[in-house]
Image (cartoon, rainbow, N blue to C red; front, top):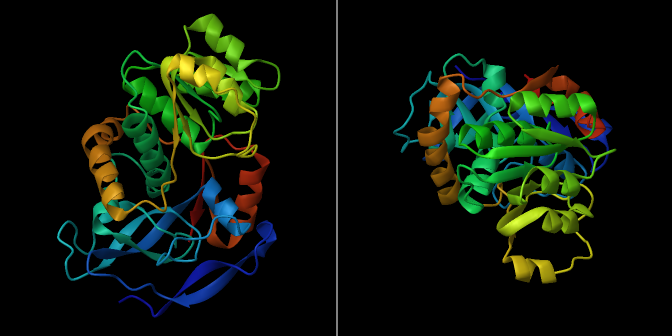
Length: 328
């Protein structure tokens, strides 16, 4: 028997981590193709921080609560749900609502808990794996033998991208903010990681390769022009965030001469049909790697749901390596 209300984290007003407060709400209602999940763990992601600040509003119809991924047990199903039954344990991509005791998800963006993974580890999968699969493998069409560069190599996205690119046969390079973080990138599969405080990644890429074929960038700012310089001909540069800002002075001559593709995307606002396609690709191509233990999410720390503000402080400090997870 599910309760009528649940605990959740609410944003009192846009601002710093201190605006996150513990509240009570009615349980979310299932649509015809939705499942209701009793959350065992929920991932903390950079978009949560941006939404908390008031700069990333939820799309129409989505929960205003933070939280884009979770793992737990299905406790109710909509009338048209055919893929799951009550009692199944899943991890799910959410359109919001993960910072709570319960959340709803479309049945087709739920995936089984991989063999040997805990609920905490499973909760760290959906947002980053959906993002990397879509942007690196679908959008940028990374191929075996390609030179792949990811910035923010020890972020949740970065640790996922390094492992997946390596597993699918790419030569992987990364940037990170300390020697320790660079060492972790290399342990995860990067051939070389560059400490951006004292190394020029453009020079490093050119010394080790003929240029990157695919770059996954969440930094923006001055990296936009540097990425262009670091590429091989016909490379694909994918932007998924702009921690240093989305505006830059760019010489597009090199884009033309090298025949580069500059693209980007956000995940949350995409239609459900796209997310279902991404989920199917992950289940077919990536979940067997997780089941076999070939790749595994990197967990930095766990916080109680009531400690969400502390989790956000850690996220914004950039001191973490891998994922931060909340436990209801």
